[in-house]
Image (cartoon, rainbow, N blue to C red; front, side):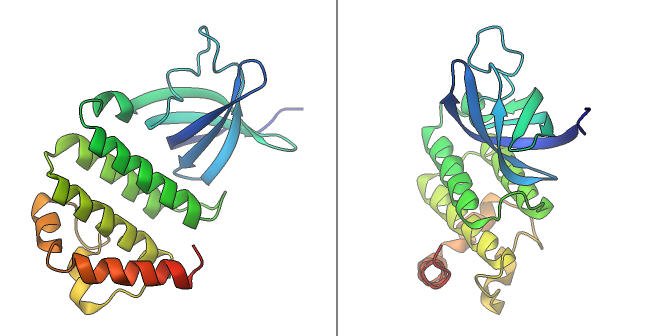
Length: 198
């Protein structure tokens, strides 16, 4: 019996060893949402999956859905954040924290192209921009705020409309402007997280 092959862009959130050489891989996909899939033989040195499924990579992946779980059959690396940001540990920590937050609040196996694009845009922005520690804090807050607004956990108040990434792109100037409202926004975010039991 042949299985349908799903092709999609994906951000590799993480891998957990299972069996002799397999991994359970958590991916944030463009068309299938967040899901976990078995990567057979990935830990083998000869595995064709090994390079395309490293943590914090962006890859083109092929998946099939079995009776009980997804399985990744191919992965072609587009970008390795862990390599490209290896000299910027603060940036790697930030993207890891944002992906960890996303996996807690986003429903599994539910397509959300906006959130996928948001996380991909953040990744590209981190690679291309020189950012201070303060600007990284502002970036994290802006992205979490946008995720919560998109999912309906927070309202988009008029004083924060300019920070909606549905209306504007990420820039260093935007991060700097956010300093004026970060304290109050962090309070609102924490209240939304508590109210939503996230």
